[in-house]
Amino acid sequence: MDNIRANPVAAYRRSAIEGASPVQLVGLLYEGVIAALHVSVRAVKAGEIETRVREINRAMAILAELGASLDLERGGEVAATLRRFYNIAQGRMLEASIKQSAPILEELISQFRGLRDSWRRVERDAQVAHQLQPTAFRPAEAVGAAWGA
Image (cartoon, rainbow, N blue to C red; front, top):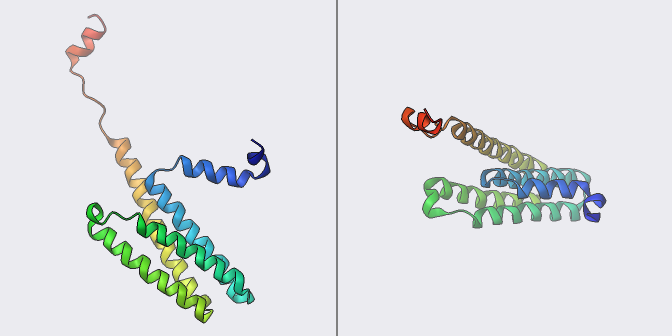
């Protein structure tokens, strides 16, 4: 309980992660990449080498986890495409770090926002589909029998 009072933001994040669906977790990981890249852009502009390197490494580590979690057998072409994108994005992050390039990082932020937004649409569509599922059909005789008619 002391940890919750000491750091309510961390407690909120922890509860959000624990209650998230797999699709929501992917969205949260994309948010982590985007946040790290934003900090990296500010660090490049401010000449803060340590911060730039730390945050780009953080984004790359998240991408490594996302890539490792891909199921290429069940995910088919989508999973293969994501794996290629993650590999290219990691290479671009490395390039941005070496060149100290805010424009490359900003381009990556834009790409990850688009990807995050796509996953949000998947989540919304899944929720709508779940809500539209028909309830179990019960013949009228069964309902009448249950009521003692």
